Image (cartoon, rainbow, N blue to C red; front, side, top):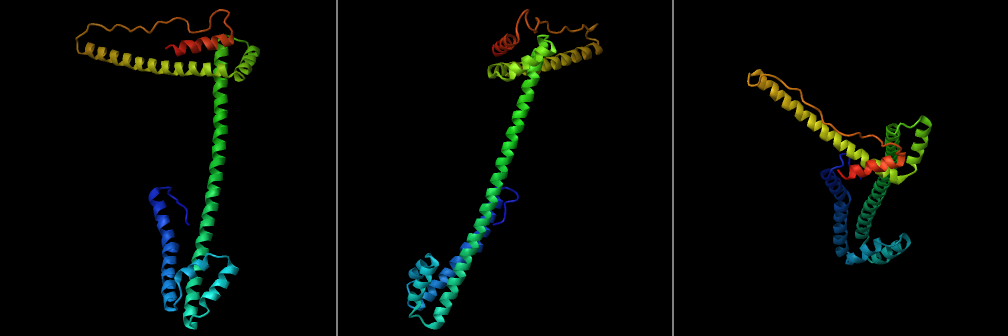
Length: 237
């Protein structure tokens, strides 16, 4: 069974139809031929077909019994039809086994890639959290030695990591809002400049930026408290 190169449903249907034509339809033709020959030999077709499903030793013993009274010429043709059916069955079985092996290899490759992806994702997560931990330590003005201790503490504390994640998401959202506001401000100023150019306004006044309180750590606030406070503030936005 050839592989599905495109990975699409139409090709999968085409492969299935090719397989059916190669084995199922060919087998049906030989079975019909076997039934016709059996009727000519005054043998019940079901008995022959039942014998084909038996183990080799039992199968040949039953066939000898069934065909014992058949004319020699018909017996030869019946055995030929049986050989054709068995050849098709063996080919079908071998091709299915090969397809199964290919499928197993693909599944092994998929699992290996999934494992590799998970390892990379974990590495990226660690790098991201390390960057967060470093930033938080910098915000607190920690010394290099204290920063190393803080990062080690942070990387072993899932609650702090979750809190820092909330802070980071909130900061990202704020940056997006600030960026949108800045673009809107530029647009407003451009419209105002255009209005001035047309003589509808005598002068341009400069805009003022947003004023806000300090976003840094409070006096005597430790590393964990700072992260958790930032997370609470972020969650309340």
